[in-house]
Length: 82
Image: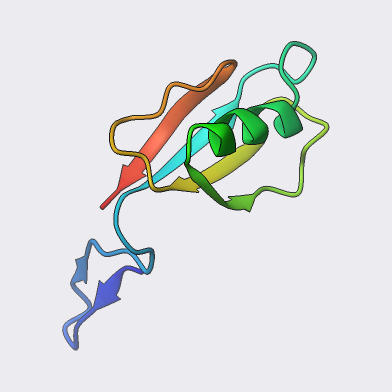
């Protein structure tokens, strides 16, 4: 999580352990959120969160455990923490 000190300066931080990637499913009519999560799990990546918007384009998936930037069919990398 981000950290604030007494003078209100904000420092980058993350409550996640290791590297965390946030991906967006570009077009759920082409690749469902379920299919994207299954592909990630088959590659040994842990799905730690899925946005409650699985029927719409742009649904976000949070991943941990990737050794490199994940390349998942139908998704776009939004941000990497860690």
